[in-house]
Image 1 (tube, one colour):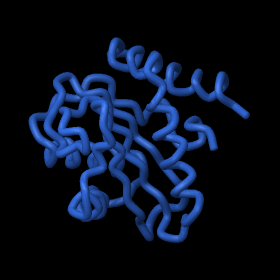
Image 2 (image 1 turned 30 degrees about the vertical axis):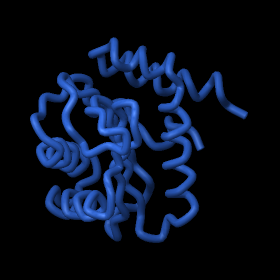
Image 3 (image 1 turned 45 degrees about the vertical axis):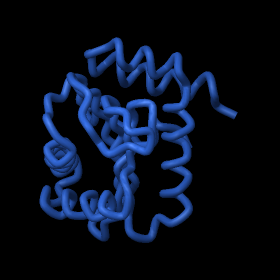
Image 4 (image 1 turned 180 degrees about the vertical axis):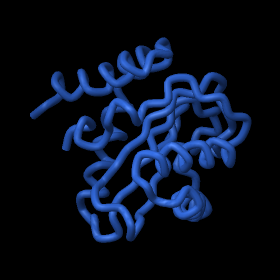
Length: 154
């Protein structure tokens, strides 16, 4: 599964200004609502509920909030680069500045897990993460995330 299958260019937020985890999740839900036509509140509630189970801050300044919705037809992603890192209650207690929101249909099962795994694998690439942190261009961020697909396709 390639990130290009999950992430459209208009789903990139290159320099998001937020002050808290809750504000970040609200902004991501608002962007997701615009892209999917699903109510912002429904999206926010689903990702907040998932965060209550345990932080999706995976370490190294990266978070992968995610959730399943009955009203979405395919897996969708949104990538945000934060202007200023925020506390996300990450596993390594480091502030987060790169966020990949993943939304999946309720019945996505294995595809949802494959998508999460793919995102985590891509964002473990230190060279890519360095490039992502150095750019505030949506086009460049999209290109970097999808270039990785070409070099790692197997």
